[in-house]
Image 1: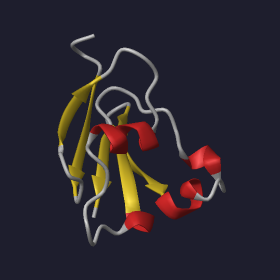
Image 2: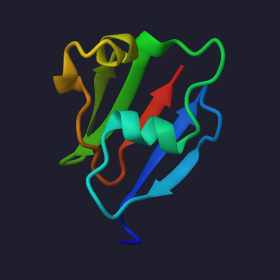
Image 3: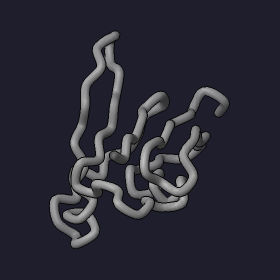
Length: 86
Protein backbone atom coordinates (compact mmCIF):
# COMPACT_ATOMS: atom_id res chain seq x y z
CA UNK A 1 0.00 0.00 0.00
CA UNK A 2 2.88 2.40 0.68
CA UNK A 3 3.64 2.54 -3.05
CA UNK A 4 0.06 3.38 -4.02
CA UNK A 5 0.32 7.16 -3.91
CA UNK A 6 -1.13 9.85 -6.13
CA UNK A 7 -0.53 13.59 -5.97
CA UNK A 8 -3.02 16.44 -6.28
CA UNK A 9 -1.66 19.94 -6.64
CA UNK A 10 -2.62 23.40 -7.75
CA UNK A 11 -5.86 25.15 -6.87
CA UNK A 12 -7.32 22.61 -4.45
CA UNK A 13 -8.04 23.17 -0.77
CA UNK A 14 -5.59 20.53 0.53
CA UNK A 15 -2.88 19.74 -2.04
CA UNK A 16 -0.59 16.85 -1.31
CA UNK A 17 0.05 13.17 -1.72
CA UNK A 18 -2.64 10.63 -0.99
CA UNK A 19 -2.30 6.90 -0.41
CA UNK A 20 -4.97 4.56 -1.68
CA UNK A 21 -5.71 0.87 -1.30
CA UNK A 22 -8.81 0.65 -3.51
CA UNK A 23 -9.42 1.94 -7.04
CA UNK A 24 -9.52 5.74 -7.06
CA UNK A 25 -10.81 7.97 -9.87
CA UNK A 26 -10.15 11.64 -10.59
CA UNK A 27 -13.30 12.96 -8.89
CA UNK A 28 -12.51 10.94 -5.77
CA UNK A 29 -8.95 12.31 -5.74
CA UNK A 30 -10.27 15.86 -5.95
CA UNK A 31 -12.54 15.09 -3.01
CA UNK A 32 -9.58 13.81 -0.97
CA UNK A 33 -7.85 17.11 -1.72
CA UNK A 34 -10.76 19.01 -0.20
CA UNK A 35 -12.31 20.02 -3.49
CA UNK A 36 -11.24 22.74 -5.87
CA UNK A 37 -10.38 26.22 -4.71
CA UNK A 38 -11.86 29.49 -5.87
CA UNK A 39 -10.71 30.53 -9.34
CA UNK A 40 -9.60 27.00 -10.29
CA UNK A 41 -9.73 26.37 -14.03
CA UNK A 42 -12.05 23.37 -13.74
CA UNK A 43 -12.07 22.51 -17.42
CA UNK A 44 -8.27 22.58 -17.74
CA UNK A 45 -7.41 19.89 -15.19
CA UNK A 46 -4.65 17.55 -16.32
CA UNK A 47 -3.53 14.16 -15.09
CA UNK A 48 0.18 13.56 -15.62
CA UNK A 49 1.05 9.91 -16.06
CA UNK A 50 4.42 8.31 -16.72
CA UNK A 51 4.38 5.05 -18.68
CA UNK A 52 7.51 3.28 -19.89
CA UNK A 53 9.55 6.37 -19.06
CA UNK A 54 7.36 8.67 -21.15
CA UNK A 55 5.15 11.24 -19.49
CA UNK A 56 1.81 12.11 -21.01
CA UNK A 57 -0.97 14.52 -20.10
CA UNK A 58 -4.58 13.38 -19.89
CA UNK A 59 -7.22 16.13 -20.06
CA UNK A 60 -10.09 16.28 -17.59
CA UNK A 61 -13.05 18.64 -17.90
CA UNK A 62 -14.71 18.80 -14.49
CA UNK A 63 -17.91 20.50 -15.65
CA UNK A 64 -18.66 17.72 -18.15
CA UNK A 65 -18.28 15.00 -15.54
CA UNK A 66 -20.27 17.04 -13.03
CA UNK A 67 -23.15 17.14 -15.55
CA UNK A 68 -22.86 13.38 -16.14
CA UNK A 69 -21.38 13.83 -19.60
CA UNK A 70 -18.23 12.30 -21.06
CA UNK A 71 -17.76 10.16 -17.94
CA UNK A 72 -14.99 8.11 -19.58
CA UNK A 73 -12.56 10.89 -18.70
CA UNK A 74 -13.08 10.18 -14.98
CA UNK A 75 -10.35 7.56 -15.23
CA UNK A 76 -8.99 5.34 -12.52
CA UNK A 77 -5.72 6.74 -11.27
CA UNK A 78 -2.53 4.74 -11.09
CA UNK A 79 0.21 5.04 -8.53
CA UNK A 80 2.42 8.00 -9.26
CA UNK A 81 -0.23 9.94 -11.19
CA UNK A 82 -0.32 13.69 -10.62
CA UNK A 83 -3.61 15.60 -10.83
CA UNK A 84 -2.91 19.26 -11.64
CA UNK A 85 -5.67 21.82 -11.08
CA UNK A 86 -4.61 25.16 -12.61
